[in-house]
Image (tube, rainbow over all chains, first blue to last red):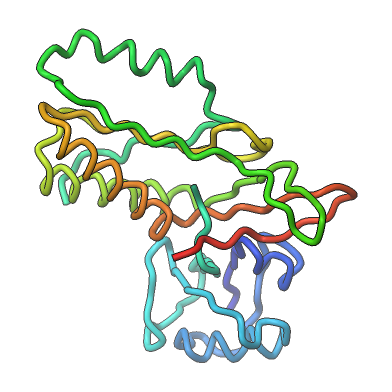
Length: 80
Length: 148
C-alpha cells in the first residue's frame, strides 16, 4: 500500500522534504510497525522525539494504518 | 466540544502593531468589559555561539492547530467568565523585534482576564502544532525549542 507522509519542524531535516510517499509491502500496519519502517528508511530518526497523527488525529502505537491515509510526523511544538 | 467552526488565528508574517491597536479600539463599544489582559510574544534576537537570531520562520499543521485552539478556547470559556478572547499567531517570516503572538482576553473584572490570558499563552505554546525555525546569517538555522 501507499501512504502519504508529512513531516514538520526539525523532522523535515531528517526526511529531506515536507511531503513524501511511502510504499509499504503490507496492506495495513500498526503505528509501531510504521515507526520501524520509517527508522529503517531514515536512520537519523533514531532517538528523535515525535508524535504521529493519522488523518489529523493523534494515534497510539496500536492504531492500524490503512491505505490512503495521511500521516503527520510532528516533533515537539515550538510556537509562540 | 460545540459544533462551532474553528476560527482562524493565523496571519502571514508579523502581527502588526496597527492591527493590535485597532483590535483594542474595536472593544470600546463593548462597555460591559472592565479589564483587558494582553500578551504579545516578540521574536528575540537570541545569541547562539556569537550569532544573533535574525528572524523566526513559523510553520504549522494548520488544520490540527486550529482544532486544538478551538478546544482550548472552549475550555477557557468554560473555566473563566470572559467577555471575549482573540488570538493571532504568525506564520512565515517574523524578524527579530516583531510580534509573533497576540493574545487578547477581556472580562468584566481583571482577575479572570489575567488568569485566562496566561493560561491561553501557556497552552498555545504546549499544545499547538507550530514550529519555529530560528534563522541566522549565511543560511544558518536552528529549530526553536520551547522551554517548560
